[in-house]
Amino acid sequence: MISTDKPEFILQSNLLCKDLGMDPKKVPFPQKILTPAELDQKREEYDEILSVVSFFGQKILHYLKGTPILLSVSDDQGFILHMMGDETIKKTINELGIRPGVQFTEDSMGTNVVSLSLKHNRTPIQIIGDDHYHEYLHGSACYGVAFHYTDVNDLLGDLIIMTAIDLQNPMLITLLATVADSIERELLLRKQNRKLNILNQIIMDNTRNGIVLTNREGEIIEFNQYAELFTGKSKSEMLGKQVQHLTSMGGYIYDVLQNGKTIEDIQMDFEQESTDDRLVCLFDAYPLYDEKKQLLGAFGQFRSITERVKAEEKFNYLANHDDLTKPPNRRFYKDKVNHLIRQSQESGDPFAVVCLDLDRFKIINDTLGHSSGDLLLTMVASRFRETLAPGDFVARMGGDEFMFAFPIVGMRRLFWKG
Image 1 (spheres, rainbow, N blue to C red):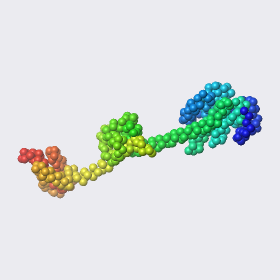
Image 2: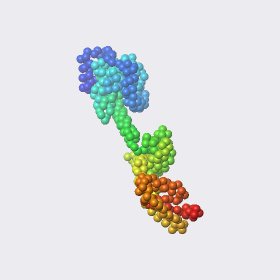
Image 3: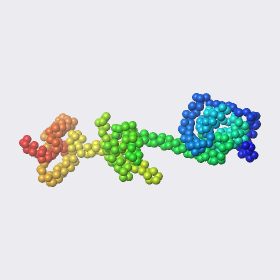
Image 4: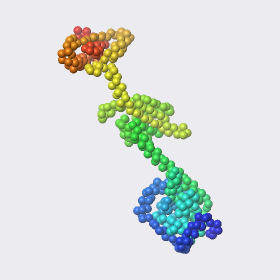
């Protein structure tokens, strides 16, 4: 085919070949060919890219089924990494020394679609017939489109179609450009997903909240290390399981999935078998929706309030108990007796209140010291507690004064003992 109106980049490339003294009748030989080990290493570096290209490449071959074409992919330096398609074309060019591992440059291989599509990487390139400088390619039509990581404008390589000149079709360059665009979108999506996965891992593994994620069917798809700590169940054990297997919170999450409810601040206690300790958490659960408000799954988290609860329990204990002798104090006794009075008024059952103080306690303090007096109070309070029946209680009102309360059972026992 004789072309009278060649693109400028073709004319410049042909002129370069002439200036370099290339013989158009001779088949050029590449200056650099990767060793099998180097090719394997390069393919490993491009593994994800090659898998994406192969996926879309198979679609091109299926779409053009019956048309003999060879589809190839190169890296950003022009090394051919993979070929797929018509075996006859592949065998022919292999005999000419063109195979995976060969590097295409204008200086060594003349006017070729690989080098020019990488050089003009924003423009689809087609080289038809005698657009090629070397005559061995005058019977072929070649098309090339570069592809990138579009977020950083990083050139990755190019996609090439080679076919017989009789089968040239402008639609091939359009098809190739469309596929290259799809490849770029897929690569960008995978790259973004990797970043999201990293961020997700950082959040999931470094937050001090237990986190459980489910899909819309209620299967657990994420279970972080603090969820393992709180529940005593391993991630490998729980992934893929129905959320109802989490007896403490599974019902809440299931309710979220079924009814779209939002659940907040449900207090839960977890007993730690290894330490016999207790973890106290507040649990929240929310439904997750996509941009179309379709349910994706549920998010559950529980955050520890153990230290706060322990502090509150300690405060309440100190507020209601005598710090020295440990029995309840005047405040607790007053609340308890008021409760017994109301209970007695409702049921008609009597109860007894007894006041007791220690004779000559002041003499012990004055002669032996207050530490001895404190020790005596502690021993007396301990013996009081040991003699009480269930339901009875004793409180220290202050100094050496103690008050007892005996419900009806205790009262009968008191009379019986008397």
